[in-house]
Image (cartoon, rainbow, N blue to C red; front, side, top):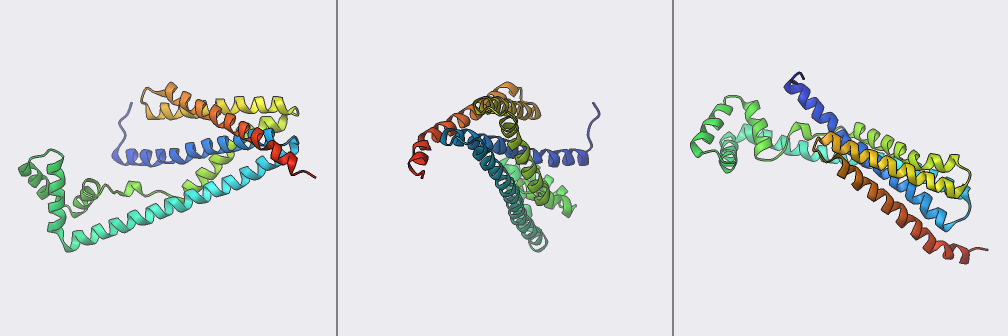
Length: 242
């Protein structure tokens, strides 16, 4: 396998950062929609009412998740940029203070004081490299942490829609409500199992099956709770009827 260049590695890490939005969006879309289907199916008898409610929940959820991801990433990026700008100004106005902070950080990580001093002195010959090192070692910040708000919002919203279709489609296509619910449960469990396995594979941690099983158990638990809640509130709907 060819070794990736430094820039290629950075780009790969940035692409992988979107996995969080994708996984969270799919998972939330599947669980939210499955919860609506199973919850309302236990509370009301009209299949059309359940479908309409699920569609409304899907549309609202996709917009809400997309907007939330956009605003969250934008706010986080603005805070990080502010800290980076402050750091750059401090590097220009008080370079010795920044060097001393880096010296202390390197020493705390195990380097001797003498070795740390030589490293700081060497880095100081390149202000750009010194700044990047201080950002990472002292403040735990870096340009790679700056997300793309528009991309995160689109990924999150689209992933929510994709996830919502997993339990919704079989319920819509199968006219028998009980059979449709059973099919929705199977597709929900299968989708979350696949997402969990994908996360484990992507992490390359050797824990693909435990990850997949964890997602599956979450799916079954959420569907069961939703249905039980629906059964519990169904008498209230009957009491409030005309």
